[in-house]
Image (tube, rainbow, N blue to C red; front, side):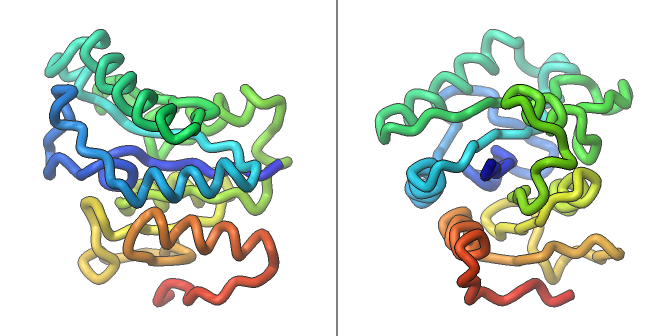
Length: 195
């Protein structure tokens, strides 16, 4: 089974800014190239899951209902292109709650995998695409290949990477999709990260 896990803010839609959240439907600005990328992955029979921290709920910044409205805008935008996400998993807890679903924890990845009758050990070769060091750490914690896109918070050169450097660094989700599709067809032509 081919599976891709995507962060949301900074990957699918514009990053709202450090310490900020998308709090209104009108502030969810979806990258056109991201929709194209997801369409290509779905057409190639990938399961596509969104895994995102949304502590704006736990912090009392917005309500669950407002987050649902924002999510519905994303789902509707995807639906117009014939895209159906296989699951959207948010951690809405406050960071101090230290829950296992908050990235870099992998609780939500486990839930996503279980929803399609799989285990982490059975999806080797799956990818996690994110825009932060925490996303990359999440991917490593789950045993996944990782791609850092530079459309969001972190730029590769601005992070003091430890052992968990991204496997690939690319401009955007469209370039990430190209890597994923090529990797699993055995024709990868893209550079690995500057590890």
